[in-house]
Image (cartoon, rainbow, N blue to C red; front, side, top):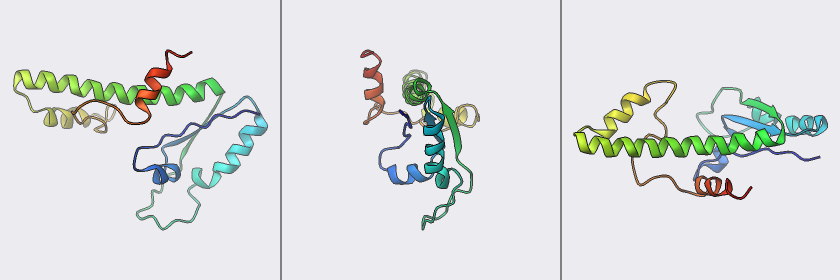
Length: 142
């Protein structure tokens, strides 16, 4: 049986992000494999494991069960969206420089919209790291 359980880790926060993730994605065509993975992830989903981390998030972790390809696409789409968000704020920064606006205040203002959020709206040199470029270049390898 084949299972895809993509990780959603930030650089420098891997251990925390494993245990206090936003969601767990399980992709498989095997009901047996899916049930096995649910049991494996149950302490994380229900936040019932022991930890010294304070403050401990109290929310139950969302679980997405899907097919293999959709599980992989969730990972690629999430990374692509975040890279797009970073590229977007950098373009807004260029416009702000030309018109005399403060990109930080603009980012704060649009980040208050719950549909957008403030995360990944810091203008800078662009996106990079170990995940974003890898996902970008993999699209041409299929």
